[in-house]
Amino acid sequence: MIKLGAIGCGNMATAIIRGAAKGMKGKIAFAGYDIDPKKAEALSDVGLEAKASAAELVEWSDYVLFSVKPQNFPEMFASLNGASGKDKVFISIAAGITAEAIKTALGFDAKVVLVMPNTPLLVGMGATAMAPVEPTTREEFENVKEIFGCAGLVCEIPADKLCEVIALNGSSPAFLYEYAKGFIRYGEVNGIPYETGLKLFCQSMRGAADMMEHSGKDVEELIQMVSSKGGTTIAGLEGLSEMGLQKAVTRCCENCTKRAYELSK
Image 1 (tube, rainbow, N blue to C red):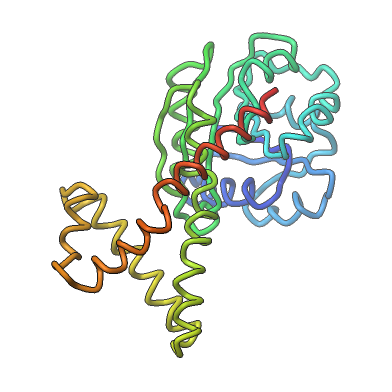
Image 2: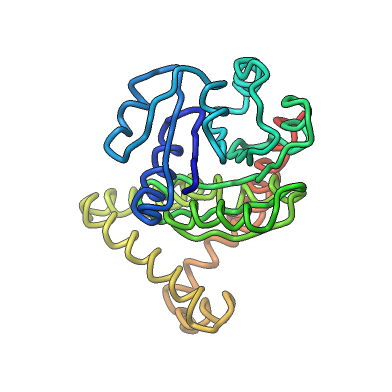
């Protein structure tokens, strides 16, 4: 039985725990600690045991999920009060927090798994990137992959690319929402109801994603499939090019990564 304890029981931890409760039934037990006791209590229906302190939670757990905001990490580590954790695996989902910073704060060469999930975990459609850090064993890492895999896709990446990957999965839902907002708003301005535009654009995104992943064609080929010479798609693509879409995407990703490195200092 895997014992997973969460320090912080907000939206992301809730999605991870509920996914694992469904996908690993009978194989995993949960405990949680949050400064707002009601958040841990809200997970009692999946058998989560609310703990009175972060230190008590660490003592109970095999795997400890750090699910607090990066700026709250110093306060969280201070609250551990020297709790014994050398045999635990510490899972961090905080942007920019390095394994070295975690090991230093804990005061020993801790087993760490760095994870970058995204909010679609909330609907079981997460895209999670993660990396093991020694001395974490392969078996322990596979257990963490299984936990997150209950709520979507999991990909392993090098530990030194956790900042770079944020633009691809961690923050990208917000970028896609911003992109979609322009199309849906355009529809409204031109007499297409919001709900209709939303449904059409969302389904188009789902279908396009499926085509990118499963058609066997690269992105350029897929663009050509939609584009007829002199047609509407070409005209629209020219508009995107004129306004510098690809440059904007590059700047977006660079800014995202830069901020992640700033948070790591």
